[in-house]
Length: 114
Image (cartoon, rainbow, N blue to C red; front, side, top):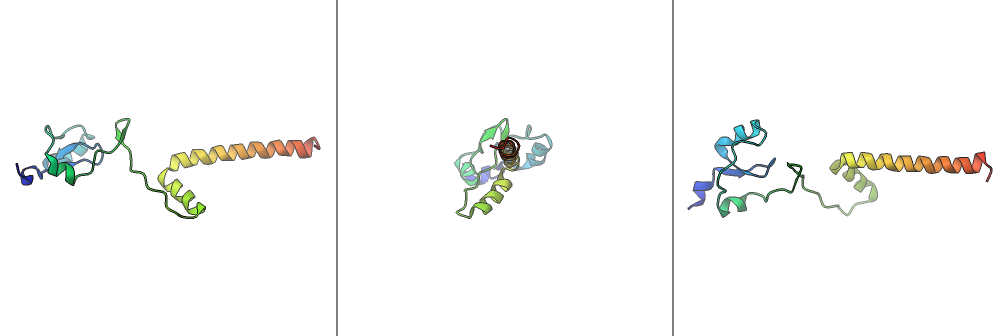
């Protein structure tokens, strides 16, 4: 079997399954449920395409970026770009903890004159 016989397949970036080129549009319109190749192509197609991405809850996880050797403020901006929801929650937790600490110190020092 030659590579030309199996060049009509590609690995879908959304679900990680092999899909025939002629079924690509149908695959995307049905939310990655139809158009999946019945038999997987041989090694040349798997080598030419990336490995199956890690899955969580039926969805492919995006690849992680390596942390660059940059100053701290640049790493904070990159963390926001890579993980916006986690960055938001972490910021809220730090804000609440700092507010509680400041209010406790305010009560101890100014109100109770300790």
